[in-house]
Length: 504
Image 1 (spheres, rainbow, N blue to C red):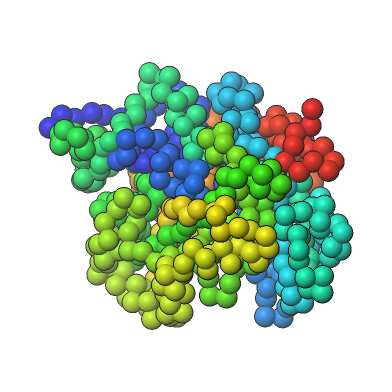
Image 2: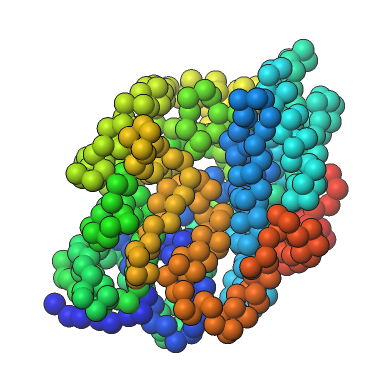
């Protein structure tokens, strides 16, 4: 068994690992970085175009980011945080485009109107309050609101066709929303790193062992899936960015900080339309409210998408129950993850989320006709023959210890780091890829503490992300400056009345 020494080992060839790798290589080009992926292709699990929403999550249209409090008011704190985090991603991508690291931006990101749409008096009242709470903040100052059917017919003609004129409706709109092909973005980042002599990519390799040695370095056993040949990687720092596969690897590491975590996998499906006559008539992302009891990943939305350069129309996702942690994983994945240190929270979550489990089981057995019926609440004229079912990937939601209930289920993302900073793992789901830059900067801040304080690293971070170290939530002038730059650099400016089009 041979031994190879690297500074950084990235486990998983998704957008998180690619972002972290690119950030570190720019901060210190001398770092020896290796990326290991069990699949034969880059970005073919969670970062694949069909395995995520493709929405540049900024809180513009996602109603689950603005929950209603018991007193009826709307909590916008999470939407503000996600919006500011997405701005960091846009800044970094802009820098990479300007430097020629990333190709023409339309290869991976395109402008598209982000819209929320609701019906029924109660939902209209909620959206009105949401708009009033968000619109007064400079991050959301360009948001528009209307309850006028004539206006909404211009915003979302497909959605408004043959809708009951007596039905209370409302919508919001932000014109500088984005559609992102995270799979394409990831492949471009990895391709750029592959041109560096200090970077090595190993596809078709699986992590089969993970152990920290007394000197603090990690010895990671990597097995070639085809030749069944193992090598040991001696790494100074390990990042577990393997999507659903991160939790089992975190458990395998044995770090104290990873104890008590469990996983609750949720899979999903899309309805996809490729009929050009239908596709060309819808040019926005329209998000609605999730059904009662549904997990956040099943918030229904009707999206115009560009995946691998091809336009399409997606609706969903429809959540479903699974015990796998990865699409090609084992049905025993969830059961294998149950350990003595997470048994209590796992059982508590099972006890307290019976309704969610019932919902997921029911969703799994829905017929194609039933799914199209849900689509017809958005698009009344949807025809069964125009829509086909496709996998929407899966996400492993976080289960954590909780003093009050014994355990709780969370639907966000969480970074777990070893006390000595030699290992980090990303767990969870939404908003995921959209906030990859901020999340990976947090990893660097935690795990490269001494180096990130250096004047050189601070200068470089400010060059790549001008808002680094400052608050876009509080600094109006800075927000306007960085947004003007990113919209222009990434080609996200719009022409009035042309949803999804670029300014010529």
